[in-house]
Length: 114
Image 1 (cartoon, rainbow, N blue to C red):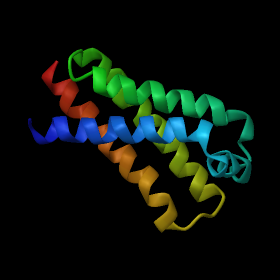
Image 2 (image 1 turned 135 degrees about the vertical axis):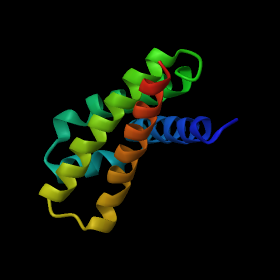
Image 3 (image 1 turned 120 degrees about the vertical axis):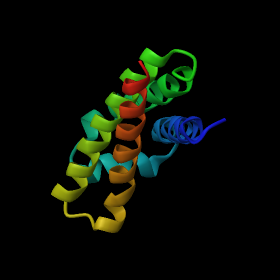
């Protein structure tokens, strides 16, 4: 298993975890209220779960990996911008930025392989 596969698995499991935690953790819903985006919480969680599953299934279906990594990179771009807009610290905003970069990397490598 190469480094790309490890990164895909880490990203996929992370997004599954965070997507599911929206439905199981009141603090995750409270974050969306704090962001002023309460009405988008469920949709975001569904995108995270779908994207995470897409990354993991993308290990076997490269086109799915391409679509999922692009979608998650875009989702994290919006997440990073939102955190900057509400004036969260860079430290708190860093995970969204790093997951954006990770999924851009996955997208670019996958696009070159197709």
